[in-house]
Image (cartoon, one colour):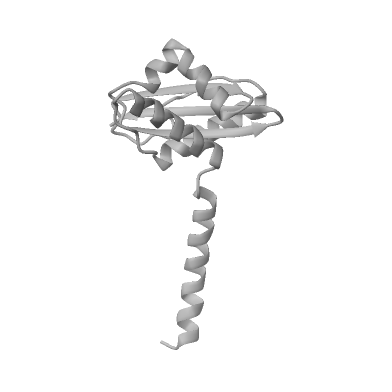
Length: 145
C-alpha cells in the first residue's frame, strides 16, 4: 500500500484518539486535589488509599457540574446510573464551599460523610469539582467491587 494511503487511513484514527483523550482527559486539578485529600485522610487512619476510576470521575464531574448549574448541592437522582455492573456498595458525598480544602473539611466534620470517606469496604473512587464564582462544587463517588 502506498505511504500516502496509509497516512490517510492512520491520521483520522490518531485524530479520533486525541479527541477522546481530550474529552476524558487529564482530570481537573481541583478534582485531583480533592482525591488526594480523601486519600490523605484514609492514610492518616492507616487505611488503604483508593484508586480513582475514570468511570466514577466522569459520574462525579457530571454531578458537580449539575450542582454548579443549579447553584445548590443535591445528590444524584440515580446513584447507580453510569456505574458498570459488579459493584457491591456505592456511596456519594456532595459539598459546596469556597475551596477544595474547605469542602473536604466540611465533609470530614459531618459524621455520615466521614463514614463514606473512611469506609473500609470501598475499593475505588471518583471525584468531580466545578468552580462557579466563589463557590466550589464537589462530588465524590465511592464503590466497592
